Length: 458
Image 1 (cartoon, rainbow, N blue to C red):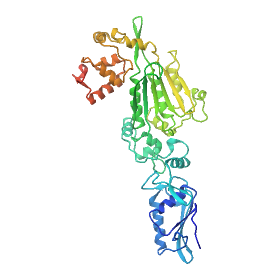
Image 2: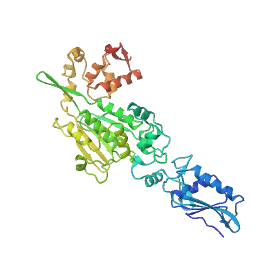
Image 3: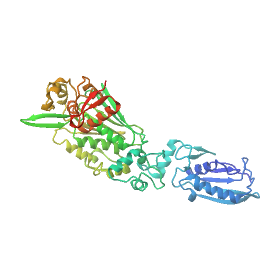
Image 4: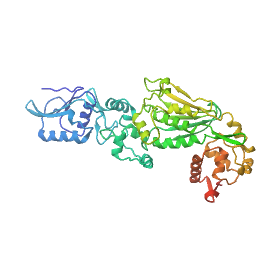
């Protein structure tokens, strides 16, 4: 009898290191058969110890291939031309991609059948196999990178009195049923492949670019740092109604927070592009990659209809109390603007969704900033002298760090509160900004407690 190799038949003279790759390739494609004890010419040469070879084959499948492929294979001893052979039948597995246990979900560990050869699968093929196995949603699928660390996420969960042990991770969908990390885990990990980019422009268009900031690491870290950064541009404008001082921030804090959260949670992470925040004089734009979830329309979401693209990720954010309930974000953004006479805009496109928040203090904010040195109503009376001797600040001509350094250029020592008021920043981002500049050695600190002053390092 002469055997002939095909897309469904592999011949091996003996068991070797390549043997597992053939089994994996059949399991990931359309199944097939392997005869061991047949030479390259298709002639049966037999095995001297078929029983031991069968045990060895079973061990290799059990210990060297993941997920468990034993239910999709059968091993039997057969006689052909008076020779003892091993016949292995492999059916297409139910949970691809099957891979070498010591290589993971990489092209060097995942194989498919192509003609009479077993070849490494491309990363795109691996993703397709994952989608077939685990469903179509990105956050449920297995991450191609299984070498993940969670230093930031662990601390973040701990601060909210939530556990981040393997059993918690399984409950949250960070680990799947086969103990693989999902793409939700990848997003939460220190190795997250996506970033958030913030760009600041002079005026109301993109003709004059001023500065940018990009945030990396765990998506939770990106969220915290990006929110702190955009809060630096949420200035306070003050006016008087009679003797009553009325203050208003450029943007409702809830609207900023919710717009950023929605942009992160609902974007399509199948795209490699980054989340974008554009900051103009009159507005902020939050650009989420990927359009609306199929079947939803803008009127649907305006009426509170919610269909999360990333259900596992949304549930993680819900458990962390970052979101309160599903489907209420846009309504609450609109409500936060109810008394301003302005309306946010929501612009769905085929591959993006843009949330536009108008600046409630525009255009009053621009002349206020330019005239700050003349005694703006933003300056406390106790700081009149400092305010009058300082040049105009608080615009976005430079990055926040550059604005602080420019403010301290004259050599005068200022308190944190004075810096905060002069630049129209809010308290928490100002503290973080000063701490960063101190760590870099660009500024120094004099005194302590309420008498602490900051100056530029020479």
